[in-house]
Length: 139
Image (tube, rainbow, N blue to C red; front, side, top):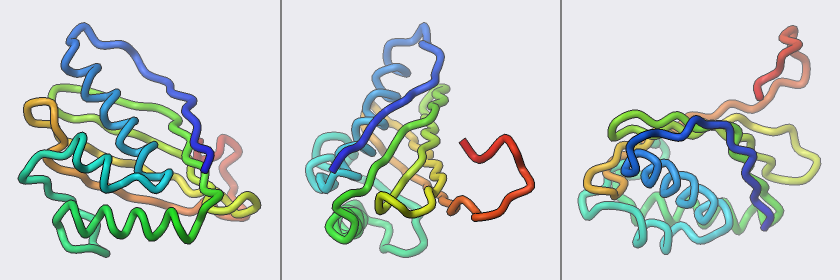
């Protein structure tokens, strides 16, 4: 499954902040490619909690759901558009094509890190509308 990055971000003067940013992006890329359980083991804290309303709040359940999505969409492409990192928070704005000719969706993942590990995760998504009066687009 191809996943790409086209990241726009400003380097921090704090190495830990940049390490968190890199971990958040790698977590998403691995998860989009069907490697969510391994990404959870590598990056999530023991007390990891997520806030996706479609799954129980534990990491194992979320990883199962992410892997199921990857199996249903083997040609999915996640392209990171930009990142923002400040303190323990990293925000990743991405474009996702589930299938090659589908309309893309915009996703925003908000990560909270503790001691270099993902402690908490929020995500929201919106499919790009077919007709939009906004000439600037979602990306």
